[in-house]
Length: 235
Image (tube, rainbow, N blue to C red; front, side, top):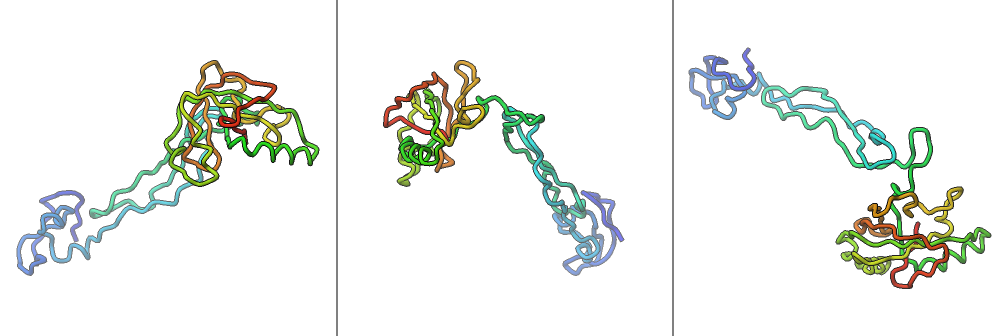
C-alpha cells in the first residue's frame, strides 16, 4: 500500500525482495536505482509518464511591423508519477514578421524582405506584360550587399547559378517591373522605400531558401541601366 515520491527511507515495508529474499524493502521512487524495492513495487506503483495536449495554433506576431515572435502552447493532461518521465516544455516561440497593422494598413516598405531572382527573366516578363496590356514604367534600385549566407554558393542547380554573382561589398542593381510593381503604391515589396540611411534591409533569393542576406539601399534609378551580371529582379 506504499508509493512514496522521491527518495524516502521511511517508505519501508517487510516482505519479499526481487531477488527472492525476505526482509526490509522499500517503496519510494529511489528504490528502482538502489535495487531494494519490494517485489510488487512495479505493479503497485507503476511508472506514469507526463501526458501533454497537442500544440495550439500559432498566435499572431507579438507586435506588428517589426521582427518579433509568435507563440504556441500546450497543457498538461496527466502529471508524472512514480518516477515517470517529466513534462516537456509547454510553450514554443518562433520568429515572425507581420506586414500589416492591427487596423489593416500596410507597414513601412523597409520592413518587408525583398524576394529577388536573376535579371535574365526580365525580358520574358516584359513581353508577357506587353501582351496583357499591363506594361508600366518600372524603376531600379541600387543596393550594396552587406552579408550573404554560405548557401548562395553551395547550390549547383542550373537555375541557381546566378546566385554565385552575389558578393559581399558589391553593388547590385534590382529592377522593379510589372507584375511585381504593386498598385496603388507603385512600388515593389522590399525595395527599401522609407528606410533610413545606412539601414540594413533583408533579401531572399528565390529558388534557394538557404541563400539570403542583408544590404543597404544606395539610390533609386527611375531610368534603368542595370549591368547584365549584377542585375536582379524583385518578385
